[in-house]
Image (cartoon, rainbow, N blue to C red):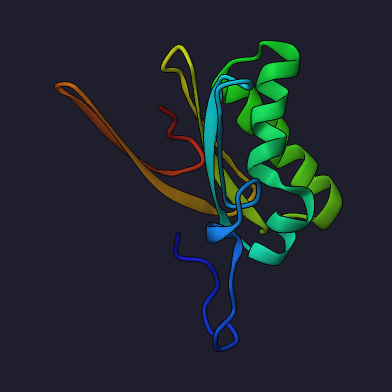
Amino acid sequence: TGGLWLKAPFRVGDSAIPGGGLYASDRSGGAASATGIGERIMKIALCKEACDFLARTGASAQEAADHAISVLTERFGGETGGLIVVDRRGGIGAAFDTRGMGRGLARGMESRVAVWRTETF
């Protein structure tokens, strides 16, 4: 992930923290990866929140992404972060509370790129 500009030297952000910036679990049936303000993402274990929601509710990847971002936004306000979620059925979801979040998909012969809020997978 790109994270924030002008981070403190030697800072370890959420990208390397299981549950925060990344998470995958057979039990939850999904995986997630996040980007944004790492300190806030780590405080709520954003990716684990999304995967736990999958396991608890049987939701789609998009519903889990929307849920996790709603938790993040409720706690810290907007312009905080985003994530992508993949469920065991191959469903993909992306959500963010920022102005935009670049993301791409390649699966077999299919490929798509989305950048702004109105574009979804």
